Length: 73
Image (cartoon, rainbow, N blue to C red):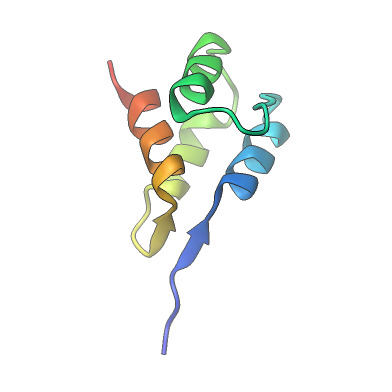
């Protein structure tokens, strides 16, 4: 049986921290997306978003909402 990767808020914050974007604990998806968008351009962010949106990766609702906001034009 195959299990999907689950990306929770802590994992998401850690991955963005590795790219130099520190997200506050307890922030909302709107807050986090705003910080990411304000930090643009961020090396490695497109690749990270690609990994997070890949087939077989399950995002917690807060992470999914943040990613969706980041990807908005």
